[in-house]
Length: 397
Ligand SMILES: [Zn+2]
Picture (tube, rainbow, N blue to C red):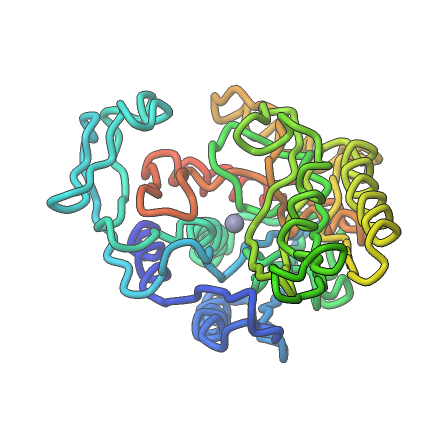
């Protein structure tokens, strides 16, 4: 199957996840792609492929040598823009402007990173949905590499372990992931952007939920009685360090970020995220919130400020640094393909960050796509094809 056709076939399956359902998978429709992938894996000789009760796909291909090498991508797409009715378009010989529809165009002016792709072929959306190259390009890369070994039984490959996770976009990809079912010594997520990047560092991440109970009385009789939950929330926000939001944060910086606020006199709530490559800086932001809540609770004993902070994911750097094997293997193969590999950071998380913490070191490699989570998402076909060659080489014995 032509790899681009394969990719486009996957984009047609709506697999958007949902952070409000509390189930795994968060949306049943993710299983539609998981089921399709199980079928295709079996056709490609991965005979033990199956989908577990959570919608996660696992499969193994016996090969040569002792090493068991894993490859992972995620089936779900992001929440920001719909992933239903994706209508991918191929633009041949990109000249700097790709028309998505009558109103929207993807241009080099708006996205300077596109400059180096002028003259290549790209896949874009029709401007009404995301593309879902994050991470269906990753799936298509892995499947296309497997197809090669199926068609060339004379070419030797390593023992391969494949997994496709659900709910990566809501940070729950690893929630029910089983190292035993995966059964690999090292793995790669194919879930990045630029194909020259090997990502071994990501944010430490915490989520914050604030609930404030105020005291509501007639404002005319409010003296020493009315405690406005919105104002308490305002004090809590003002305690956070200035200049420390996504708007100001540079590439190496973390931030605090408010996802949403609801409030009236009697009750106010806020959801917030904390992110930093540096664990101590992250913890400091969390402590500021907890300390301010304590102060407010002392100052206003009739009100109540509740701050709950929970861990989301951790920087994989300290784990990946313990054994350079997977990074060195990737460096070698990227160089062999004439690329200039860069060890880099992700200003976010990947499933591999948590796999690494669980004990399966899993750096992240590129998918040849960019502008993820939005209408301007695109895939660069020549880079995507190169990435298939790279993954084939990693798989080779
Ligand atoms: Zn992704």
